[in-house]
Image (tube, rainbow, N blue to C red):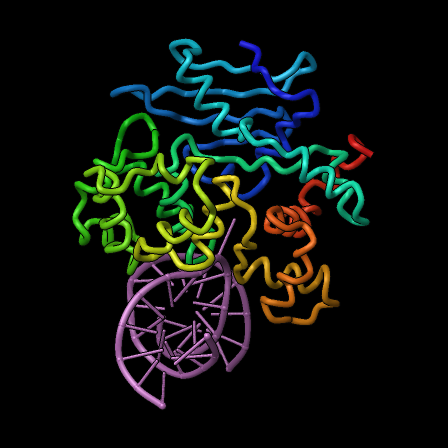
Length: 287
DNA sequence: GCGTCCAGGTCTACC
DNA sequence: GGTAGACCTGGACGC
């Protein structure tokens, strides 16, 4: 089924906007421009495929493409974001015009915000390999065709199981508390997606979850379309130092000042700047 | 084989 | 408000 999306939409730019495509239950075939994911539809799992074809973006799914599948795909591909003012700002700034020309700026999101939040927690203070391992172990424990577990399932696992079997280490109490709060409706994640609420309020609520520090808050903010914060981590600090500060490590405030001209989109400008080389072989498509 | 370091940080205690 | 140290894990590295 064809997917209604902007003319300038490029699947590869969204799929590889950050590392999620490399984490289960996503799979991405760059050669074929094909993104697959496993989602939950009631009690069952469905494999959903998104492909870029000469005719446009096509969606297919085991059991058929339902309204729910289409809504999930739109969420995953961040099709609800309006980037026009950000692209206008990029056009007038040297070194950032490629963003406007390519249409970059949509971030790959998980089918649910719960999955996004747990994955962000799993990226803290560890190698990417360990992040992958934690995600895979959690999915395996769920055992539903490879779908990411529900908050209820995660909440049902003891801290000892999370620590010893899912191998999340010291993150076990953080994950248990978060899943329990969501499963019991004490924490309504839909409120974090409410565009009418101010950034400060959302950040405060995310920050109040144990285990979610400045990096996690701003990284999750990026997936929520709130781009004022940079979400600096060890990898991006090193990258931006090479790119913008002649290899010198500088204070976070210095990096923040550099991207400040982008205002509410500073974090997005920063992220696209440090990941531009990921798309270098595609630049001829939009130059 | 073994010890150390550190990776897409966060929390707590202490000053 | 700033800083030091602890915290799980597992791969890389040096010896």
